[in-house]
Image 1 (cartoon, rainbow, N blue to C red):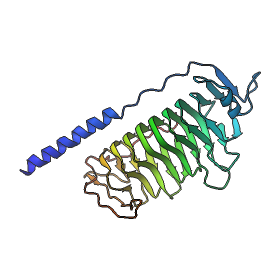
Image 2 (cartoon, rainbow, N blue to C red):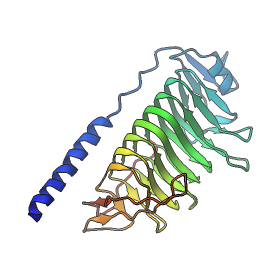
Image 3 (tube, helix red, strand yellow):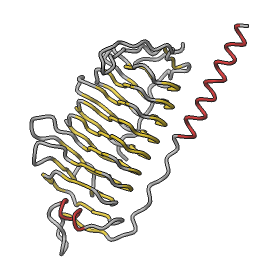
Length: 300
């Protein structure tokens, strides 16, 4: 009888694994087919400010930014590609105490090849995305931001090959559907969360390195998520979790040190908004944790 229940349990895990992998597949954002507007450099007619080029762009255009340091707070509400010449030499830092880049109520935005850096005191966020569809963030280096990458009310999101350094919060996905987060190096300042899911579903988190956070991974009221092949280095707290997070599959992650036996994922229980502690009746376990850390890509 015990073998029967074990077989049922393993079968359910395999079904969940296949289901999550399938539903979390991301469609590629459409390629830009419009004109290219240039910022910086020495070409005739080039813009000196990124926001001026964004304002002049039409849907489908590309704004290409030459290497340099740009003190701006950007607002994007058009379907454009914002492309830097090179990640390490194309730097955007705020000129006001607010979010460096805000993307609002738009579809098909691609941002790549920048350093986004907080240079003033205060709780300055890197990129804040609200009510958007088909957003790709890649080859970005976030430095010292409060919340580096914050999504709320979005779907079809791709976040890959980015580096987060000395940020309080790395990636926050709030009410997000259909997202893939892969090949990022997320390093914090031992303060808050590395990667946070809240009220989200159909999320794949794979091939990331998460370290130097109070809680490297926090999952709150989410469903149908696959977490696999990540290096997860905690400060001793490990993963945080709350009630009503169902069908979260952990598989082949590296947890702080080499392991042979399954890794039991200890949960930290947070109170709900009404300050009532809730019990989670499910056991979290990575049945086949990795014995060695993975070689994570980062910026390409």
